[in-house]
Length: 123
Image 1 (spheres, one colour):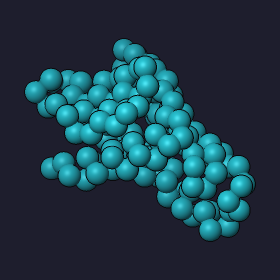
Image 2 (spheres, one colour; image 1 turned 90 degrees about the vertical axis):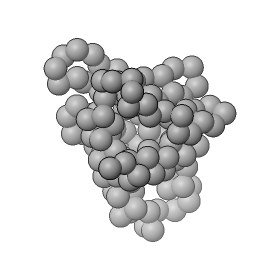
Image 3 (cartoon, one colour; image 1 turned 180 degrees about the vertical axis):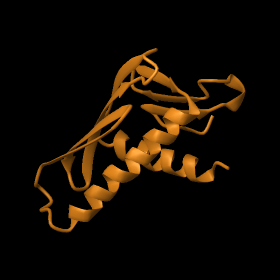
């Protein structure tokens, strides 16, 4: 196990084979392949960079929506500059599965930083 908070978990277990990452939020969880985890990380960094680019221009109470799509992912960030949620849609490229997930405030920020730490600590 990598990280577990009250409402979310992030697990990495290479011994599990194909689906070696688990993301769990509230009452649901999804297992990801390493390539899916990698592509999720890349999109999270991109949408965070978009937020950082405009953050200084935003008022604290201003509501924002940012969307980013790079197959197989679609990500939507909603909230304010310091408090935001994330919604994801995943469409499998090999048509084996698709899913949606939602990370509410403040889980989205915590889980984003934990995924960033995990990815950056991998080989």
